[in-house]
Length: 411
Image (cartoon, rainbow, N blue to C red; front, side, top):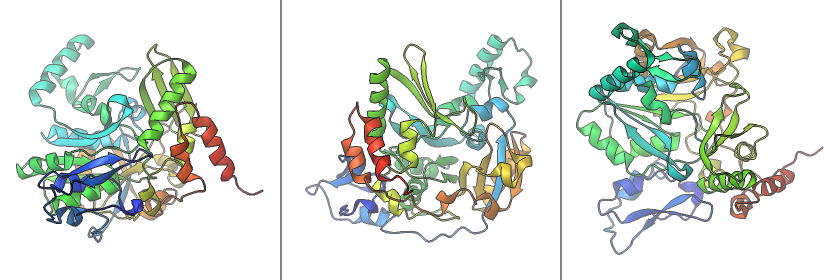
């Protein structure tokens, strides 16, 4: 029976919940807004599956070798602008959907909650949608559908799947709920369906531990992760902004490119169409994230900080590209794609050959120089334990100021 006595030993992956044969495990939020497994001992049959599926209790050795690194950005300027970095996820996901596969990713659901979910687009749906969009755009020839057609405002007029990936694009700086997606993924794999599963390193590790075997029809993709912030902290911050503006928030963008890829900004859209938009170094929520005030306890002792992963792919911003490979720099974002398996490298090559991306192989050691989060856990700072529990809907800025004062560098 799984029992969490040390919160640094649980990243909330839902593996135990998905695996329990009698459904006696639920996830309950603590005072910081993070979820942990709770067992109904009366229903528990003491099978031990929950412990055996835990990716922290049963840390798997890295079996992948030969990690390769690639600088990638989408051929569509507008698609790059719509993404957090170079739109590598869109290109890979588009490729899987085009083969009739299923993509799992993170979307922002109601009440600004991040959730893992799946997307499949039927050929008939795509055909009908394309026809409607062609009529709206005044396009009559089928040959024009070979690639996305996007207007100057970034609206997709005609698409081969990229539109459907829209809600999964962009970074979400808040922990996402896996729910029952591990089970859904397994069911699809057993039916022989092609699956692309995208999430954080710990959640991909949770999926692999849950499955307990390799599937040739599964591609897993994680990211270089700084850590996962508290959903409760995000809700307090959104309420804080609503109180300041006197308006209801209807959409958020953690990585707006209104100022470019660097520096990106936090954007909140309100019901009257107006926006709050501040650069990452100014916005309080992003400052709290980068200064580790809102991260889950397990992030400070993360077990998945390695330069090679058991996933097929790792995606990230290619920080430092303008310094190390200036010819590969895209002003609106360059993706760093790490392939950890031969089959991943072959899939990426196929995407490149399809004409969707610009791609150049680079030295992994150089490419990771400014992505330290792949090697080192975030450091817990003074006042972290008080930060989230001190938040209300009105005091985010004040609580952050006190936290920053405690961690001010000595002069």
